Length: 328
Image (tube, rainbow, N blue to C red; front, side, top):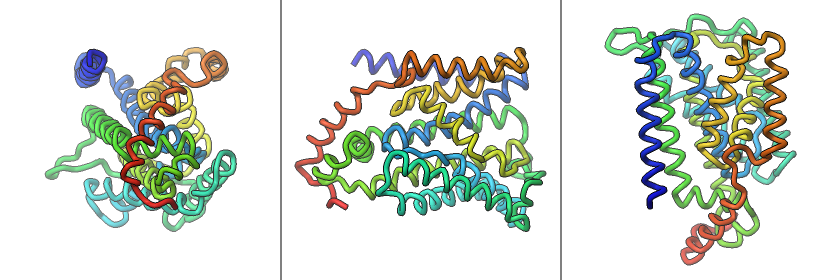
């Protein structure tokens, strides 16, 4: 109980610091870095939900990010919709693509699933690159308008910072709520041992599809925010390199840990900027730090391998009496 109260106090303190920091440090560059970190926190937390908790290894996560960005940008620029309509639409469209990807890949595991998701990511990038009538291809979409409210254009750095901060808190809260629910325990059971999960009546196919839909939805929202924040997007921003960067954030922080995903996202989005003064040596140092961390602590900073098994045993005890759903 004391640990729970301490965690709650630390969380409230961190939220308070994040809320007042822009008022203390009135530096536009730092504000932009913190806003970009917020985008990557959402992407890392959403990927961690699918890969870390459900055990579905995905190498094409940036595809959902790009789908959300293009959906929102085109909805506002071509259809004339308000940002406040395009924003949830981006999440829903990304979630639909998550379901489309999840259904035919549910029987795949490990490297086969990873390669399939990698192919999906490349297909999305190539469609964005070659459908020039709609996306302008490699020229990208410029002049994406900022959100408006009651006729006022909301394009100040403070607005974007507090908007992404609110998004981060809502996404983390929603993911944590799901993880603590029956669905979360079922996903952890599937990750630890899918056959054992099936044996206690968990519908593994349905839960994995739901995990992809939820994770893709949050990534789509992050993409929508990025499109309007940067006012310009092109297909190269959502390619394989971006997917690997998001995956590295999850692995560095510790797969299966929301705190780890947040930590990894902040570290890997800020570290290249901290090392920028070292010019061409910065990426060598960046890569070396990643290698050392993985060699010393392969499960990541906040990864803990035993926790999953304990949760599986608890979920099996809780689900067995009711039978949950029929096996797929």
